[in-house]
Length: 294
Image (spheres, helix red, strand yellow):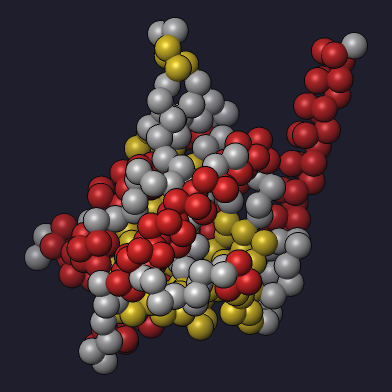
């Protein structure tokens, strides 16, 4: 059996999107490597970089265990503004390049708590063997330091995978992420709805946990927020027609399935260290900006 065949039968492709978060990306990758080091299934790591200019691309080129895709998504080239592509377009590059039976979607500003991917894999395999038509499996995650509990989101009653695993065949059948209707927000919710509509079960891996730090690049996050209202309106308009029986009221938009968990390895210590770096960086930027405005 070739390596490609083995990946298709039982492999995991970990896919991350990244833009100008080199320090966080390095730590995210290290947590993935540590998790997969002794895994009993084949795996690969794919990073889609949006044209970072903070040294991320150069660092990625030196990592021989990472498949790197660079899709310049901001700025100008030869005097012309580069066309801004959607999050769905961006992530689909990695999804379509993946060779694994499963695609594990993570973020460059997250840390894998030991056991998360391995447990997710075992849970997915176990459910498929039981005859359950599983299409995706969500991991619990939290925004540190704002949240103490970990959670999985249900949007309008349907589990959404922010961090977790997809069956690659299921993604093939639903046509991956909608690239046209959403710039950034609601595209992950839309993907869950497409899987649900096609009859796939969306499950939760009860023993998979992820740490997430949402302030790794506030400039990019604020930029993404500009599409929030339009993306959400597009989602409601689309799915009210396709699945009209669902309750789309605002109070049903995002419901948390919370869980307490004690990480004995204290993975979040890395974020405690990096958060000091982020605060220092933004303080320096503010001082420089202030001087320029004098």
